[in-house]
Image (cartoon, rainbow, N blue to C red; front, side, top):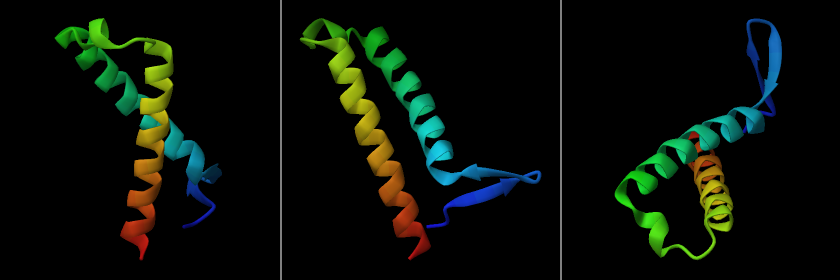
Length: 69
């Protein structure tokens, strides 16, 4: 995987882009879970949100490595 990519001449770290995408996906997923009422069954919502974000980030990172090989 490349360390960075050029966005109109500004080098942006790939990890920053993946973290931003994971945050956006996490926000959409969290809104869906709130709408469905799933947070009533979750003991510690902030810890669950952090774990969900880390899983999404790891999944995106693995997907990116799989696409490049």
